[in-house]
Length: 229
Image 1 (spheres, helix red, strand yellow):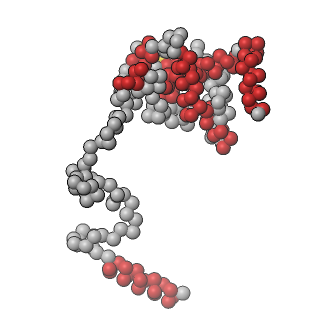
Image 2: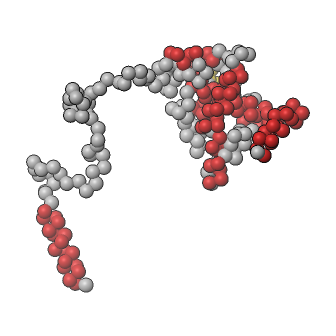
Image 3: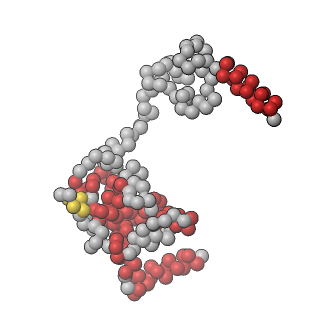
């Protein structure tokens, strides 16, 4: 055993001896056992690059590139992005509140009417199924896939505690945007108008849950038949 410690001491002494003194200067590149982020495969600003024929590292955006959150054409599309809606912004549309209080109803800026509200709800269903159903379930009852893997605290959006009378639309919008509890913020993932579409779709799910059987019999039977295939 003593020879082991002697060999260990000799190796340690050699290792320390070969290492440069802290603060000393050397023209040689340092040895990095764990380079981490010290060296990255990237071009630094204003630096040349042999990769490109003109030798310039700084490049113009690819033709047709659209800056995130700056798409004027989005005004004409449900789910479009007509302004910088991933941050900043005030008022009902951007925050869900009016004069410091959560508001009920959809913002006027959405321009909803009898002709486009159906498409708006459909958009809400699409976005909900992509981003929300994994936890809250496709029916909003909190029985999504993540719950089966032990994720706690998933809200059952069909409960009366989330009804519009006690849980305003603006508050629901704010939770989607900024998160709450175990739920993270989705304002950087879901466009502003899409978040409002999700709010409207959640309200539709709540109404459907309370609808009398006679009113939804045809849709219910169709859904059961589809699941049986």
